[in-house]
Image 1 (cartoon, rainbow, N blue to C red):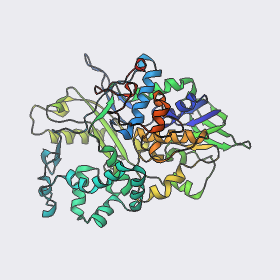
Image 2: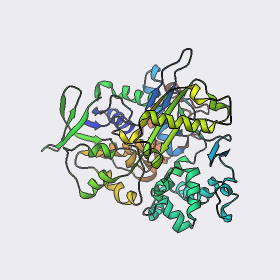
Image 3: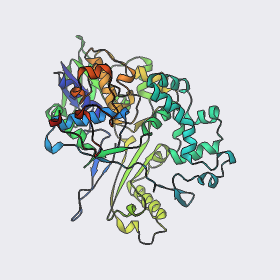
Image 4: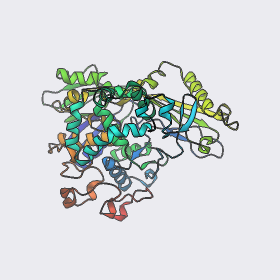
Length: 496
């Protein structure tokens, strides 16, 4: 079977690897001049006698959680089958630290300081608690339900899917407005609590992890290695698909506009592995059901902006740490500003934060910057559903249409995460190949179970272990070949 894949992000590349492993041929179309989608490592200009300087303009971290075990399985697979120069090494990522500080109303203080509530003039009943403690009192019971039985817990979440998280806190929990604003400011982003209750609980589930990791020399090493295994000859960069059509025999015809010519190919099946915004921009394509089209048109992607600032010294290590990342309303406010103005504001805010340290002059230390407004890119920002969108869009959005299939993190229950893109790719590939699609714990949460298309890297587990649903918590696997050691380097093939 020859399958066309639209999009060379992680879901498209992963789908390509799964299909090639099963003996099929793939051709991947990518509108950009690189692979990776929202996995994007930007490299700054190297300075004299300095190491390579880079920052993650896209995905930047992986939770060391069983919910994300398929990501570690993928890394094991890439290291097993990829070349030595593409080897992926994991290093710790520090998400939280005892030294983390907040800058609130012109004052510095420890992030988890119970005195912030009094500073914000909250009602007496909410004082002497940190913002994290206040939020935890609401979300921890839900996280406990999801951990006990993910499928049952998620069904209970959907009972409140029509609520925004803000409305839930106000109407169900009974918090005053000022308490909601205070907790949102310290624990989230401006206006993010207007997203669905389901979305915010799922994000808290994914973030409720102590240990985190990232890739040495950049996250893009993952997608570069995956692309090399798919075969660069099978990936057409700078090829924007502008036409999709059904053939009379059930196959699908794709046309893509390249740099110098238009390519037209016919495929046995097509996988659309792009965000809805990119599908919506393909004007010459089939029209599907009303709710399918509404899901493509209306699925919410939050504004996302990232800027990396390159300085002469790592001055932030003396006290705390930097890059800058903005979501939601904070990001949207920057979208109309020229880059020079965005950099100017960042430097101003940093200089204000470090004003009490006469040895730090951020303007003198500044070298260069790189920023990206993901909303302006074809792959958009992050999928973050509005109230009710899980209930009305989720199933119809991922439903196949003839021999056209759909994949992407927005079609998983773990929005914004690499693991979500992989979950979706596994499900879509199983459906395309006519295998039974097992929902819930087997494909959505990383449990082993009877997975119809084994995730990449799980080929090394015995069939009996997969059938019995062995533990997938990465710190407690039974087989040496499936252990990610505490020093975070992934084992080579010789341990199998």
